[in-house]
Image (cartoon, rainbow, N blue to C red; front, side):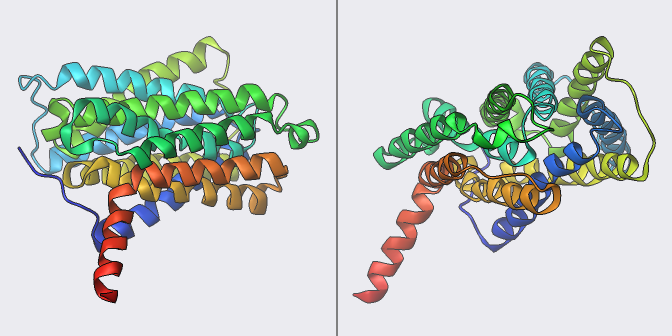
Length: 312
């Protein structure tokens, strides 16, 4: 069994870039929503990225071998991937991109809870359980702040949108647990991603078709958003994420995900002129603190121990 490593400089640098990309994806989807529905954007990006991953596997001469039993968890992560982005796409119709960034990135502590029960090396300490409580309180505080939503024309029902964002985060966290606790833990990053993209495309395109969200007005903004989603988000960033999951402990990687909601809030306010109500901002800080406590406990403890040794 391949042993996962702690965080090093490569992992830190890659996670910083990925967090900015993931934060900006909500901004791009929301900005282009007038020309192409979020659900259709997500379906197109899954389909195009699946083709790109297939071409990469063919170029590498990497066979898609289903005899290893990975197709069963692969089917499950494909369904979870589709559900995650159904919740995200629908949620962006009702809430702001900055709100979506916070609730979607509750995924790290959702994953931490699941991994605690399944893998000995991912057990949670008391401080991490406290972090889960802090993050939960933050979610409640953020959900109760509706002042900004009442004056936001593009966020007609923020409570519903925020709840859908939370469901998307739960689906993403569950995906991480499945990947780490199944045969996919030893599968290539390309193979794991292909399972997700194919499943996501089928579910998302079917949902877009049945809900009447297939309209596409080919403006510069719409095309740019779709290309960004296909190439940068669904192909590059997801491939890098699954590669990291094969090399490093998932709970250690999660500590850096808390940067994503903060980037998302910044981009949303700066680029989309989205408002910030005090209760949401306070709740977002609590969520970030909770995620840091849950995902970065070992990293923080080691840093404190090194600091104590250096002073002695």
